[in-house]
Image 1 (cartoon, rainbow, N blue to C red):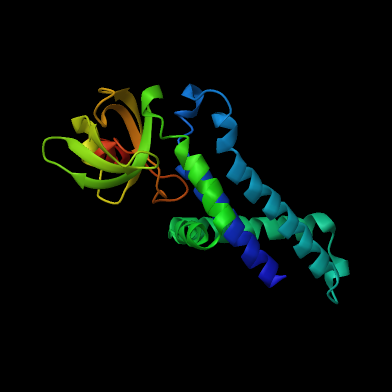
Image 2 (tube, rainbow, N blue to C red):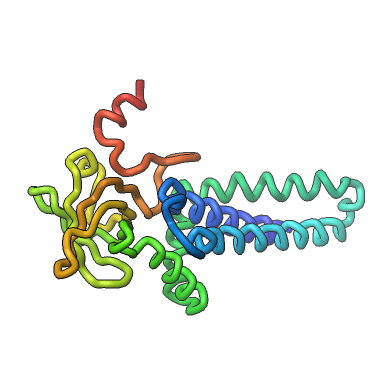
Length: 215
């Protein structure tokens, strides 16, 4: 049962990670099949967690004292333990590491991850996403997008305090021209694993917002 709980914790951590990195506040602006695609990975993790919980129940019931406990108590304990340890995994960025490892080693998962990431890489429709490569003092940010190579983003000053090289971001705004890969950002948030439990801050909160949050 311990192995089942550990596996369930890992799955719960991945599920929290997936839910938290998704820019749900931008999702209503997506069209077609794309909003549904955002639900694919969380639903996969939920189904996996359900199967592991049932497996944990069946294993525990076969132990010497397992018959003494009602099914609801066994399942409840398994779920609670998975939530607690999964939240810890997410909070210390282990879930983010597992996501990267799976993307590097499992082709089906990597392919699905790439398709979901591409949802946010539609500059002509007002969305762009990728990894921050460089940040200039003039407020321009260079990113490696998921589809079209490097893009230059014009980022409002209120977002700059929270940006760092290596961050994975999602932004809404306007493509400057069809000829150049430049994008004027209106809203921006992190697409990386958040810090903090249970919820982290969005990009653009800035120093004033952080100081206000401590009061």
